[in-house]
Image (cartoon, rainbow, N blue to C red; front, side, top):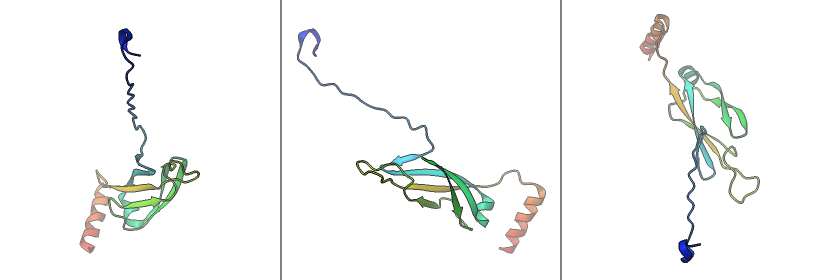
Length: 116
């Protein structure tokens, strides 16, 4: 209703949704960055990854590079107007370089460098 008996106008509503999760969303796909220690990246192993519905164990291949992505099919956001269909969760590995090496660790890295 318009003010002082004036004509009715339009009402505009703006929504601002803050993402306070560890996921980034693009349509039905979710993206997540997982920190991976250097040893698991080099040698391979398992890492636990949180999804919308819980945790899953993800196998990491030996020699995984920084920025490598793995797709978890069906672990994304529900698809609009499609019952029981979900997008994918894309996990990007961010490899953490060890800091403050002990003398022994530094010596072992030097030996590895010489072998390369």
